[in-house]
Length: 278
Image (cartoon, rainbow, N blue to C red):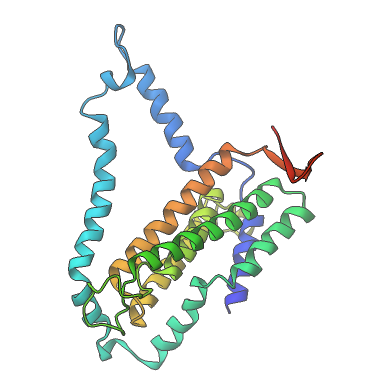
């Protein structure tokens, strides 16, 4: 089942639109274009012509994100008590979340990423090759950061302690590695393939099918970590946030560095020399 769903995702990639800017990039271009036209004569900058305080407008979403995380820390114990309720557990839900859990493991992506790279090589699709590179970099980066954070925080898991505030006890609860993995993968895939043209099967054009599937699976993995009593709610929240952030940064810098190649070769004396071609 898991392998079949990964293959479906790769197939959706093959019917995605031709190369186009991501939605965030297009939105930023439109925003600054409109703002520059609205600047009156004698105004030194765009920000002076815009109402309100630009810094506060940018800071508020981030403040809300971390405020939500802080609230979850306070509610961790109550949420854990709810997810432990036996009325929520059954053979059907156990099987469902057992299958969902695999999407948070690194193993399946050792299949999916090479498949995407192979598609790029066979059909000479530079976009698929770039996305495969970004997925590889993103997953390695996410795993490295997660390991460091887990070691530094040492938080005990719910089945190890009844208190969600047991940090620096050599635990591995904060934050969720499954959430980081799936949200990194879902974010990179969704930002590179925001729309799919499914007109050939009568569904319609410009359907956000791949992002919907990716983020839905990512959300199910987060719920599974709570259902299985492996994580506190704040572990999952910050794991998802970390995965989304890593995916976004990798896509951003991947676009910035597109066209840059790095070649390493033996130096004339000792060691390696590195050359950059733009």
